[in-house]
Length: 257
Image (cartoon, rainbow, N blue to C red; front, side, top):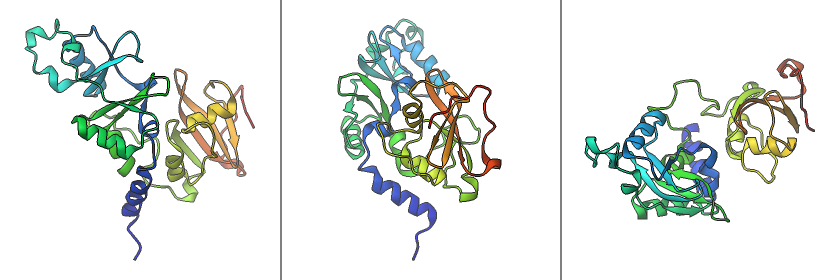
């Protein structure tokens, strides 16, 4: 008989998992919270409180020089009266480095071998492309996982595929990858030299956009609704051909074919 929808989605994700690469699941470097080598253990604990993360790359002069990974659990091995003077580098663990091209099943093996939950993803030039965590890998299999530190707003993208009637107007994260966009909207991104919805927008526009700029791709209009510095943080997707479903044109549109 037919599998329950939830089971079918997990099975589909599992089948795709091994074929995905580290750079498809990682948190990009622009979103990575790291600590300088001269930070203290007290700084580590403050960063954990502020961000909700428990593991932080420790960097040298730049984030491309990751010298270790600081784990907040290790901070408790330092006496409270010494945390403000103890360098975080003294408790940092050796970093696990994986190339962007490494398949996710091998990333899992590397994390298991190192008995850790965070790997630094490096590009072909040796620079830091991002980080991938055990939670990132789990989300590749089961979808977004709620965290006690996550804001309790409505998720940007639905956790289950919406019906066709609800796919005409969607707010989506720019970080969604092609398979996630298809799962959320029923629309397949065209292939290109990009891996995320934000990358598609940048490729079509040819510049870093402002809020309100849009691009038409096939039967979809993708409008930028939020930026995080130079990154497309959120877009609104509408199906073209139905005037009631199209967004109001911005005052100074920057459309691209």
